Each structure stands twice: as C-alpha cells, then as structure tokens.
Amino acid sequence: MTADVINLTLKDQLKVLVRLLKYTVPFKGLLILAFSMLVISTVMGVMTPYLVMIFIDNYLTPSIFPEDEIMWLIIAFITVNVIAVLTTYWQIYLLQRLAFKVIQQLRIDAFEKIGKLGMTYFDKVPSGSVVSRLTNDTQAIVDMFTSVLGTFLMAIFMVISSFVMMFILDVKLAFIALIFMPVIVFILLTYRKYSARYFSQARSLLSDMNAKLAESIEGMKIIQVFNQEKRLRKEFAVINEEHYQYNIRTIKLDGLLLRPAIDMIYILSIVVILSYFGFLSFETSVTAGVIFAFIQYMERFFEPINQVSQNLNIFQQALVAASRVFTLLDENRHEPAQAADKNQEITNGCVEFKDVTFSYDGKNNVLKNISFTVPPGTTTALVGHTGSGKSSIINLMMRFYEFEHGSIEIDGHSIKTLPKEEMKKNIGLVLQDPFIFYGTPASNIKLYHSEMTFEQVKRAAEFVSADSFINKLPRGYDEKVVEKGADFSSGERQLLAFARTMATDPKILILDEATANIDSSTEEKIQASLMKMRSGRTTLAIAHRLSTIQDADEILVLNKGEIVERGKHDELVQLKGIYYKMYKLQNSQQ
Ligand SMILES: Nc1ncnc2c1ncn2[C@@H]1O[C@H](COP(=O)(O)OP(=O)(O)OP(=O)(O)O)[C@@H](O)[C@H]1O
Image 1 (cartoon, rainbow, N blue to C red):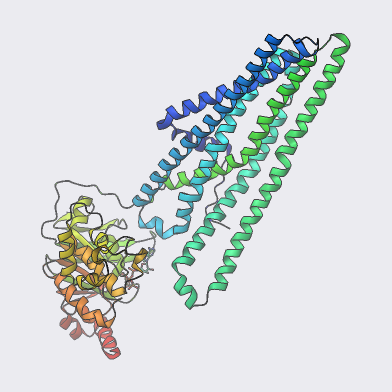
Image 2: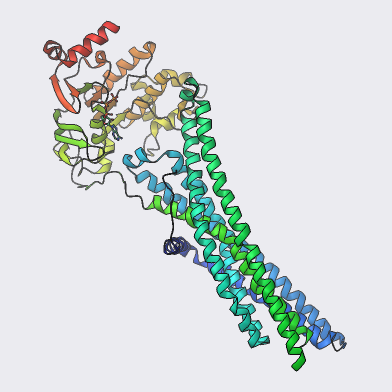
C-alpha cells in the first residue's frame, strides 16, 4: 500500500478549503467581478420562468394578445437571456483566470519550498512523488476553481433564488420542497465520506506511479543492463491496476449516489407538487402559469444540487490534491538553519572539526568523535573503506545535514553561525558525479552569478584546462548542453564542474572522489588541474585511489566512523595498518 495516503476528515477538508481560498485574496478584484457576474446571471436565470408565467396567465390562457405588451415581453425575455449568457461567459472566464493565478502562486511556493528542504527530506521522498505534487495535484486544484467554485456559487444562488420565487408563488409548497433538503444533504455527506477515501488512495497511487516512472527513467541504464524491464513493468502494472480499482470504486459510488439519487428525489417532489395542485384545484383555481413557473423553479432548485453533487467528485479530488500540496508546503525537514552572525568572515580558510559525532537516524552514529584541523592552504585527504564515513564528513561540512555533537569551525567561527553567503562564496564543492544543467558550457560555469564576466568564465575554464574541449565545440561556450550534460564524456563533465568551482575562486575546496570517474587518457590533465586548484587552497578531499592524494599534508584513515590512523603517506605506510593494506592492494592491482 502506498505511504502517503491522506485521510481527510470534514474538519480537515474545511481547513484545506479555507487555506486554498486564502490564495485568492491577492486577486480579490477578479473574484468580486466574477462573483458579480454570477449574481447577475443567476438573477437573469430566475426571471425567465416568471416572464413565461406572465405570458401564460395574462395573455395565453385568456387568449388576449395586445401587440405592444407582447412585444415588450419578448424584448424583456430576449434581453434577460442575452445578459444571462454574457454574464455566464464572463463569470467562467474570470474564475478560470483566477484559478490559473492561484495555481501559479501555489507552484512557485511549492518550488521555493523544495529549494529550502534538507537532504533528510530527499532521502525519504522519491523525486517523482514531489513532481506529482507540483504538477498533477496543482492541476486538480485548477479544476476545482474552474468547475467547482463556479458551480457551487451558482448553485447557492440558484437554490436560494428559486426558493424565494417558490415562496412568492406558494408558501406552503415552498416548505414542502424544503422537506427534501435533509435527504439531499444526507446523500451528499455519505458521498463525501466514501469518495474522499477513494480519491486519496487514487492520488497517492498516481504519485507512486510517477515515482516509479522517475526511478525507471533515471536508472534506465542499470535497468537495461540488469535486465530489469520485466520486473519494473510488473511493479508498474500492480500500481496501475490498484489505481484503476480505486477509480472504478469511485465511478460506482458516483453512479449510485450522484445523479440517480438526486433525480429520484426530484421526481418524488414533482409528484408531491402536482398532487398538491390537483387537490388544490378542487378548492381554489390555480393558474397554469403558476404551475409552470413552480415546476420550473423546482427544476432550478434541483438541477444545481445535481450539478454540485456531480462536481463534489472534482471538489473532493481537489481538496485531497490541495492537502498534498500543503503537506509539502508545511514540510519541516528543512535544510539546517543558520544562526548567521553577519560580522563573521572566512579569511584564511582554516577548517577544524572538534569532537564531531553524528547519526542520520538519531540511533546509529556514523561519525564518532571526529577531530582534525586543515590549516589554511593545505590538503587533508579522507580515505577508508566504503561506508566508513568519508562522505558524511563532507555532508556536515557543507551543511547538508544538521549535527548536534561537537563543532565544525572555519577560521574559528562555527559553520552554524557563519553567514550562508559567506560559506557559499568561500567553499567550492566538486562532487563524484558532477551535475550539469541544461544550458551552455558558459552558463554551467557561471551558474547565473550575474556579476561574473565572460572573461572570468573563460579564465576559469582555462585554469582547469576545460577550454580545449569547449573550444572544439561548434559553438564553443555557447553550445547547447543537454540535460545532465549527456553529450559530454565523464571527464569533460568533471572538467566543467572544476571550472564552475574555480570561477568563484573559493578559499576552501571540497573534493568528493573527484577523480573516480575519469578515464586514464584524461587522467593526467585532470590531475594537473586538481594540483593547480588545490595549491594555496585549504582542501578536504575524499579519495579512493590513494595515488591521487599521496602528496596530501595529512591523510585521515576512517574506519566505522572513527579516525583510526593519521599522518603523511610515508608515515602511514610505515605504520603498516589499514592504509598500508589499502595501498598495497591498490598497487598490486595496477
Ligand atoms: N542519507 C543517509 N541516511 C542514512 N544513512 C546514511 C546516509 N548516507 C550514508 N549513510 C550511512 O552512513 C554510513 C557512512 O556513509 P558514508 O557515505 O559517509 O561512507 P563513505 O565512507 O563515504 O562511503 P563510500 O566510500 O562508499 O562513499 C554508512 O553506513 C551509510 O549507510
């Protein structure tokens, strides 16, 4: 079963609705205008039967047809209907506009929120599910504004105005019509109860489908290599089938409780009213016009209720969808907060870990009492077996995760109090798998730092020797780069990422396995670039290939979250411990 099914009580639904309606406040002008159009079109709609009634009772029944009066009646009839059509059109158009404005804002809010969430959120929530919230769920809200809000508001006006007209025509009968209201309300509430449950399941399954899809697309290489197509197709089919089943349940519920049930009550009420008029005609004479108008108003009383019940479906879906968007907006797994002290600056770039202990889940410590110092301009390398905690050290240093025990300082300032901008400006990160954006080599290096000139971009590329491959591209720095830079070799992507890092000239460099993806032909170039990048900068580097960090000023050997050996390459080799074993193993493989 899916993990993020949302079960909404009536109270929850109301809260979601109010919150959603709050989004319309900035566009209240539009809302008021749409609302006015709605009132006018409803009033016009109510007037039509009344005009027909006048025609039947005053002219048709007595068979008197004074031309003037009939002409005025026709003009009034046409005018009323033309106004009704025009105002209905405007009301629909304005509500749609409002809906798209609201959704635009909601999507921006949601997108902004995603940027603020911490890695703890992304560790747990699949990307496809987040995409689902931003696309499918917000679209469901558009549907609500366009079809539901209009229908609901119109229904309220129609029901009230029809009732008032019925009241004017016959008080007793109007009350009889009212007797059916509790039954209708009961039907609608029953529908709401069951449909909300089914919709929530269906939406959550849709989100699962998106997640599966995203995973499949991202991992297509591995899927094909490991022949996983069948398994994934089966898994996808299971979710798809479940989604179908829930949709069928809603259709059954709709078929039973919506139109047919309300229609039954409508027919019943017509029977009651006609019988009433039948009995009444024995005592007093009832005009044909009044009967006509009353039946018309009865229809106008029930039709909007029918429409509301039909739209309840969309309404329910939209509320569930909105609550999913709001859950994302309310998500509190934020990136670690900075208690920024504006006066703190990074001057030399001295990095210090003091007795840092850390766990991702609050239970298992993956780093234990880590202490080390990287003096300005020197290189410290982190080595160790897989899972020993190297990346975790970098995750903390980059503020991807919050830590509670110990402290990490740069130039004596805690990284929790250094201004974010200061950190970003002075720390350059090169990841194992460099992320290349859709754009151009230039935009990937510049990364929208508006103050950066093209000269600076070029200099950064030249510095890391990325210029030779960029210059070979038909349009050089302006060549189109596809998503993730799939057209480039991994070495080229790596060089581009180096250039991006160097473009801001950071004081501190964090290299996460920066050489792991590079083929041997580019290896030399990369090594030379790295050497240049590191010189004069405080560097913290993870390396699997020990040959790349032999010159490091200090090598820290991690094992199960602890620093078990430390020193220069030669010292560690002499120690004949873990490092020595790793070194020997790697040498024998070469
Ligand atoms: N996001 C995460 N959530 C929970 N546990 C994690 C997370 N990332 C890593 N871990 C766990 O923390 C431990 C240390 O992982 P880490 O990635 O720091 O090791 P590493 O030395 O960098 O490994 P590798 O060389 O394979 O990259 C491992 O046991 C790992 O399972």
